[in-house]
Structure formats: structure tokens, C-alpha cells
Image (cartoon, rainbow, N blue to C red; front, side, top):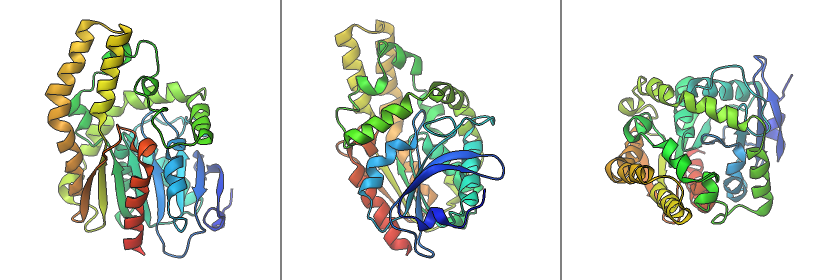
Amino acid sequence: MTYQNEWELCENREGVIESPNGTRLFMVAKGAPRSPNHPVVIFESGLGVSGAHWTAVQRLLDPRIRSYAYDRAGYGNSPESKKPRSAANMAAELLDVLQAAKISPPYIVVAHSYGGIIAREFLATADVDAIAGMVLVDTNQENTHPRLSVPFSAIQALCGGRDYPDVIGLFRDTSWTQEELDRIAIDGGAPTTASTMEQEASLLLQSSIDLGEKNQLDARPLGMRPVTVIRGDSRRDFQRLRTAAQEGNCGTKEQLQEMDDFLENRFDVFDRELQMNQLRLSGNSRFVQATNSGHAVMATEPQLIADEILAIWDSSI
């Protein structure tokens, strides 16, 4: 498949891009056709979700900004990949497709949740000069999962058979339009979503270890290129889960106690520090606390993210 920069020259576009190496990823381009040397925004999603979760942020971006949201292999409209679902492999697949479509640097990388691990592997895989800046939205870093040991099995039990986003009211308290919500629902119901999420989750800890061995937090790899760390309030989500579990008589007393221990002895102690440690990626970084969001800041305060992207984009042109 041959490209002549049509992905950067068309105002809005979506479709599957296939690289010469066989990588196939679905991508959605928004914003004005790219001007020479202007940075483009690349959105990286969290565990278990497609690029549709960035639709509100893309919609609210300054129209001058060219942006690309994509579905990782196995999510949404992207076919599955035969490669192990490590963060390093997924970052390499993204770079492979960007190069195939001639979507050239510089990139502003915007990531959420586990996407932060993948974005940091992208930083390691791409030429460091390719990154104009980063916006890390309540992201994981290499020490998040080893330090927090999130009790996933207890969380699943306390949901009582319901989906976690439904229990915490994610789709009630949102800035997504109905059309955007419909797309998110369709993507979430894709036949390969559950198995892909399981494959990614099975390598989550190893991917964290592998990233930690690169010592990025000690090396300041971005120099003075801007980094914004936006922290949500995941505790709000966990508390909503706990309240719903008690009201619905879901889970056991031991599982409720496990959640309490997690919140009081690990999450409340370490989460803010883990988020702020990412400021060390650059000597030009800032910390923003989202005030009306749980973990999914892009659902509840997308304008906050769009504003931070614009500030980095303006400083880069």
C-alpha cells in the first residue's frame, strides 16, 4: 500500500492503515490539514478500550491542530495482532503504522491510564527528537502496578456482574455526545475486545518492569520539551464502587475489607506521588489536578485536556 501524505492532507479521515510489515491499525484523523513542521497529536488509550474514548477531546481541540486517535490491535476496528501484547510491541506497531502512512514527527503524545506505559515505550522506540511534548492523563508509570497492587479480582466481585464503568456511573457523568457514546459501545462490544484486554493485562507487570529498566524517570529524556501530568480522582470511582457493592449486597466482607486496605494503605499513600514522579521526564513540566473527574478525565473534563494540548502545540510552532 502506497501513501503520499494523504493522511496529513485530508481534513478529516478514518480507515485502516497497513504497513509493509503487516501491521494493521484503524486510525481517525481530525483537524486542519497539517502545516509543514507543525506537531501532530497522537492519542494512546488505556487498557481494554478503543480510540473512541478520545472523541470528545478531538472534537474540542483547536481546529488548527491535526490529531490522530487509533485503535490498538484487537480493539474497535483494528484486526488482532499475532505479536504478544507487551507495551513495547504495541508502541512499535504504532510507530510502524505512522511511518507507513508518512505521518511524520514531531508528535505530541497524549495518553491515558495504561496508555502511559505504551506512550513511554513509544518515546523509547521513536527517535527522542520526534516527541514535541506529552500530556499524561491519570497514567500508569513503571512503578504503579508493582506499588499499588490493585485488587482486580475483588473489584470484579464487587461489581456484582455489572461492568465497572456502569457501576461508577461513567456513562452518566460524561461530556461524550450520544453519537460518541454509541461508537464507544460498539467498539466495546467488538468480538476481540475481551481476549485482547486479557492478553494485555497478562503482560502488564512485565511491561512495567521492562519500562523501568530504561530508567527514563532518572534520565530526563525529553530535556526541556513540555510535559503535563493531569491527575484524576480514581478514589472517587473506587468509593462509588464500594457504595454500590454495599447497596447491592455484592461481594464478601473480606473483599470490601480488601478494597478498604487498598485505598487506605496503598492508593491514598502512593497514587499522587506516582503521578507526580512523571514530571521528571522533562525539565519543563507541570502538574494539573482535575477537579470534576474520576479516572476517565477525557470523559468528564475533555476541555481541560484540549487546553493542555493547545498550550504545548502553541509552544512548539
